[in-house]
Length: 232
Image (cartoon, rainbow, N blue to C red; front, side, top):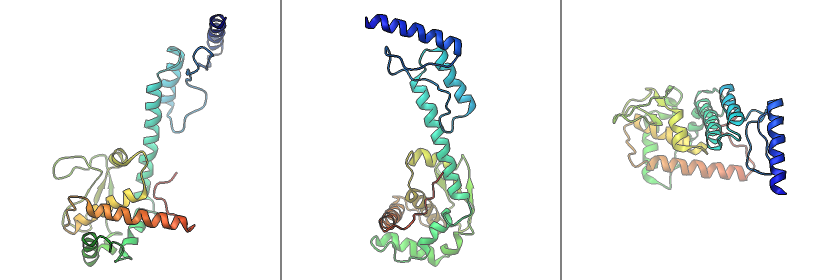
């Protein structure tokens, strides 16, 4: 009986889909069939929707792996735009004002003396004002001295020269859940290059990330609003 019901369900389904051209729906024979609906998954372009729609109509259920890939790509694109916005927008929650928090707290890295020494040296050489004089150059190609495309690149011993920012690599390296502390640590690391610090083991960046994250969590527990760098 179950086979008969399934066959009948498939027949009705095929006839209905052919007449109304509505795509596929779930059936009792294959409860996992779930293909393109009329709703647009957030951020999907028209071309991607057409791909999903054709998969649903032509392949009887669609390629689930490809669907997940397209949706993941859409989410990645949104995250890339959020990263760009964090560096380029001009309000109180942009990256420059966030970095300014370190320039106003000379003792903020006191628990990691080596990192605090780097911060003090940066401040003594003008970091507090250079934050607002340094250009962030958004690019898909930030090549370091070894020829590698990196998340960010700065010139050693060259204060106030531009810092190259590659949002695509940032998302690849830190995504899909990028925290404010990730971006802050990355850019503080690049700024340290301007003042001659290599931070080859990223210990300075790690100390910055930890302190910033701990402070953010403490403020959140106290009910203070957090200035999220990445936002819709």
